[in-house]
Every structure is written in C-alpha cells, then in structure tokens.
Length: 271
Image 1: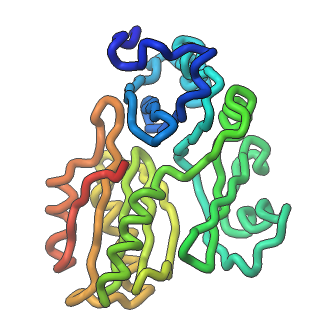
Image 2: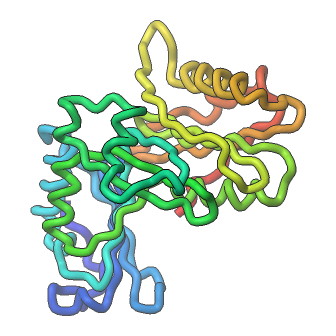
C-alpha cells in the first residue's frame, strides 16, 4: 500500500518537512493526511485505511505511522482532527485551570475510572462556552511523542463553525446533526449562539432499531426538551464519510426524518 510518488512533493524529506504544514484527520477506519506550503496552499492529500487485523484503534494508527515514514517528519506545524468519545459543554467563566477532568467526570461515565482517557479542551471562539472532551489517551500520548507541538481539534468543528455562521443569518433555530461511525453529535444554535451540545452513542441494534431510528429518537427527545418550532426551526445534517465509504444512508435518513420535520437539509462534509 505504497503511495504514488505524484501524491506528495518529490522534495519532501525529513530535512525539507519544516517547509510544510501537515494535517491528519482521523476517520473511523483510517486517516486523511494533508500537506500545505507556508502560504497555506494545499500540496497533497492522501487517504490511508487501517489494517483490518489491528488490535485496536491506537494500534491501527501506529501501524500507519510505522509504515509511512513521512507521517513522522518534523513539519513546521502539525494539526490533528480527532474524534472525541464524549464531551461536556460548560460556561467559560466557570472553568478553572487544571479542573477539566472534574467537569468531564460530573457529566460523562468514563470507563476504567478514566485511566485510559485523555481530557482535552476546546474554546469555542464566538461563544461564552467551551468543550471538555474525552479521547483515547494512548493515542494522544503517541501523537504528542511523535509530533511535538501538535494542535488538536475535534473533527466536527468545521461543520460546527459553518452552522454557527448560518445561524447568525436566520431568526429560526438550527439543529445540527453530525453523524460519524458510532456517534451522533447534536448542536442547537439560535442567532449564532450555541444553546445545546451533546454526543450520543449509536448502537445499530440489528432487528431492534436501525441507526436512522436511533438518530430520530435522540432528535425528537432534544426537540421536545427545548420546545423547538416544527414550522420554523431547521435541521442540518452532516454525514461523515469513512475511508471505505461505509456510512449511514442519506436516503434512508431523509425518509425517516421527513414525516416528522418540515425543514431538513443534508450538507456536504466541510473540509
């Protein structure tokens, strides 16, 4: 599974890497590697699927790093777009340095007493709130050792920002659904302000309830609790693609939601 020579700059090496910015976007079954030059111009993008025989997610990532040496080069800047396992939204005014772990534990069940969990923080630039997130600690530590000074961002942030921008232009509330392999991120905006944020696990209980039906259940629950207006408020849906293109069917999801909600739209995944 070697990458074609044309997919990356011919001059890329451990010595020239400082002339490039590198981005990694994690998917459920692989990662997307991207390079840009010092002016921000995209140079290349490569998609690498995981080995199906890997022991776990972290092991699958490590195998790719060992196989593709350019993933470990010392780039000028490194950005990682990760898939958080869970998170909690808190007012920024209540946050205290070093107490992120406390906020996460009060709202989220952490397996193994949180020993394998990396507690991440993300400030929402145009909000008076911030996210405290849980992620794979071994993977986080591996990336920190491999790429010093890496910037980490939740993978749903491009979709979040685009929905936030659209919300400022309309009076109706906007409910943003971000579907990934086994999670549903659900945000509610009004006038650009974030009213609600949460993530839900999607189990896909075959023979009991499909993923599409699970999405409907969580959406209806939030819709009722926030007393949203079916005549005016809108739903925006982003379905994250995977390396092998296994994802929730857009047509199936639309068919499930349309009998209950008047204004729904499917959008392309922001880059």
